[in-house]
Amino acid sequence: MAKTVEEIAEAMFKMVKDATGMKKLKPTDLIKAMKELYGDDVDKKLCKEAIKQLVNSGTCVYTYFGGSFIELPHREGAAND
Amino acid sequence: MANTLPKTPMLDELETGEWPSFVKEIKMAAKENPMSSDLLALLERSYKEKIGHWKHGGIVGVMGYGGGVIGRYNDLPEEYPNISHFHTMRINQPSGWFYTTDALRKICDIWEKRGSGLTNMHGSTGDIILLGTSTDQLEPTFSDLAKIDFDIGGSGSDVRTPSCCCGMARCEWACYDTMQCCYDFTMAYQDELHRPAFPYKFKFKFSGCPNDCVASIARSDMSIIGTWRDEIQMDKDAIAEYAANGMDIKSDVVDNCPAKCMEWDGKELLIDNQYCRRCMHCINVMPKALRPGKDRGATILLGAKAPIVEGALLSSVLIPFIKMEPPYKEIMDMVERIWDLWCEEGKARERVGEFIQRVGLGNFLEAIEVEPVAEMVAFPRENPYVFYEEYFEEGDDDEEEGGDDE
Image (cartoon, rainbow over all chains, first blue to last red; front, side, top):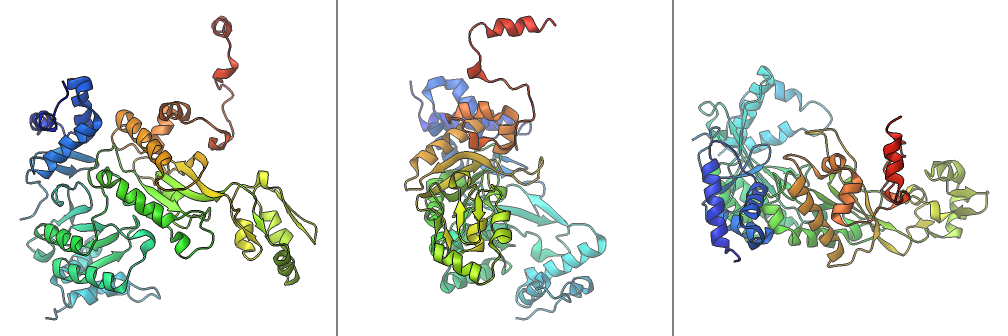
């Protein structure tokens, strides 16, 4: 059964949360993982919408360290107060 | 209120040359803005110590966007508190960099209020670069800019802000409407511009003719360069006038033709158009006499990059000729196929040009469903051990296997 944006977003959020501190995940990593997990029940467009929802809601943020990643919001080490 | 400028003997040296100096501009801004004043002092210190004092900020940005803000902090915030944060904002420039003075004043007013007041018009990306602001001013700046119809540009692993030459607005050689095309692509790929989802950056640049004034062939992953496929338009009377006025057509035009497809007998210029490489040289030398043909469109090239992770690449031909007519569906469909493949198979920080080199042009073309054509050959063949699939017939494999025993 086709998945909803909310379901995909929740699964992506869990992935990002579980990877925190171990691996930075790129949007393509999340999309590939969702395709593996849900097969034909998801497509790229749905996954992109889920990422958009995660970022627009502030649940996740884009970060850049040589490439762009999706992470949980946090205070970065380099930041000055 | 005017500030006292820090002493900067080394930076002052940079003002003594004959060229305009960025030091002069920072000093002007520093009279009014403490960020610029601290910037001068920190830069002087860096020159003395030969050490940079900037740290990279990888998280700062505006809500919902993944690009357009380049985070910077200094590593001596107690000594230079006004530039403790000094983030750069990239703002999407209008096509062809055309502004009204009113728009420019509004941008500058916003930046004097929200940032250092320092701008870079324009950065090598093509964007308006607003230099230096603090994290808490990013959202208000974004909001102020949105009110005057400006948006943030690209940075990170996304579609970078597309840019184009001034095209038909000012140039008689433009073979398609670069400004319209750049605008249409920018609007079509808003999602890809603001939400990084690629292995690495992807740049579009649009040039109206092969003179390639925005150097798209060297600076963009996808270069869309105007060209024509019929014959160069020729005004024989104007050619005769050039000759009568002393132009040496043989040495200045004919001998410089890279395809050697021109002849000049002292009276008449002949062009064998089937061998013309559309380099524009003859047209540039005799603009009154020669013009691009009437059947105009563009050549699409793919794969340029500057040397960051690996060496520099120039774009090479993907589509030799295509009519450039909105809504550019054929091109955009192909772009989507390229992105799908690159996102699926590309390595982190691998540009599309490097990706093609790794997987091979043949495999790449097959995957994006584009037929190979002779124009795609970037270099003459160097390796004699090339496998031409269509020349092999059933049974050839056995012969090949037999040959391995030798």
